[in-house]
Image (cartoon, rainbow, N blue to C red; front, top):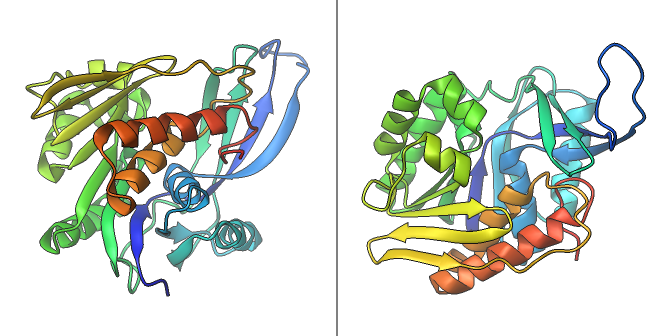
Length: 289
């Protein structure tokens, strides 16, 4: 057991099956592609990126009771992530099709990742901030369990970080319901991209969190807070390979800098940009150093 766990991430641990199809997918016939398999899942991605960036992290979730689940958990341990999980069902897989412009489309089978029915023992020990992707809040029992865990974290003065995850996840929940859920959680930090922010109708006065961080790819990152609106340019990245996990790495860099290193907002955004850049030059969701 670690003495200090800065980031506890609640959510999925799945296999990422990444299909690189530079010419796109031709319906009804063959398409040339390269297929790779990696450890994935938004919450697990954040935990691994945080650990590799020198932070301390814990992963919490339900993992399939199968050989794939064993393999995925072993990869987390190798990366230095502490594990607090329940095991049941089968492990899930996400198929990400990456086209010639490094854009991704996903086919999602979460398996039993959403079957977290109770908080694992010791999940909150030494935690400074709990990070939750919206994927963890789409359906019960995971949603009910995660909300109960967040209430417990708030009762212990632990910070709460939420990622909007995807426009698809927001649309599935319904924009109004998604906004209500975020307001109910009242996160200290909300991470979203430009499209997610627009869909959620986020503005500086109506930012749904104490601090809202809006990622815009190669465009400047925008931060809404009580202090107003701050913008942070993004340095260009050459030879982008795969944007899978870039947003998760961004969150990891930001949170490690804020909560473990007590860095400023500007330092946290700079670290987020750095870690995201190290991810998009690599295959899969793990930053390359």
